[in-house]
Image 1 (cartoon, helix red, strand yellow):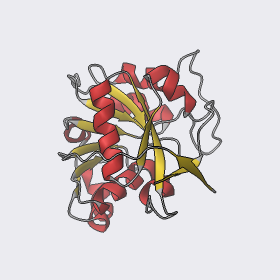
Image 2 (cartoon, helix red, strand yellow):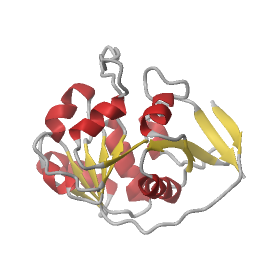
Image 3 (tube, one colour):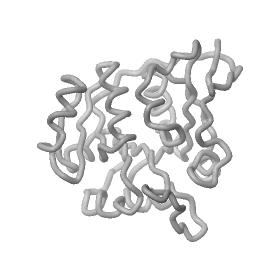
Image 4 (cartoon, helix red, strand yellow):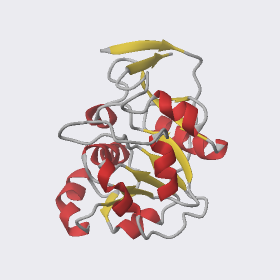
Length: 215
């Protein structure tokens, strides 16, 4: 079900350089598909190597290129969506991110049982931030099922809503611009911890809400 969301409209258009994607599961692939639909270039990486992604990249089109984890992590914007237990190994050994933006699309649950991971009182984004030293972390793209990220974001007559949270205002603005370039409507929920917790799965109050902003 989609819920209407009344809000003032605004448009932010930005020119995107190549985006790195670490993780080619349901969320990472859906994000790559959304980028491909707009002709935005991305390097897609997983733990099995570029050869394992050749068929998917061919399906998505010429803007999506299989690459290594290191190649994906070297981009100005790096999207991370990896099974929770595999995040430490997926991000281990990468160079300092040196101010680059990391989009945290992860949730502290994992199939097949989808039980909550033990975070010891922290939010999942705090854990992710520790794994990407030097990065400006923005929480986004994690609160909806994968198919709603790759489907037409205007299918219900408005713009499907995606939330963002982070502590760096320019980084959030960049991610919000990307969200809107993809056809969604971005809502800033504030700081990485307080705002991110609102749409973290599990524990948040906003996950899986398919909100739609109508003009």
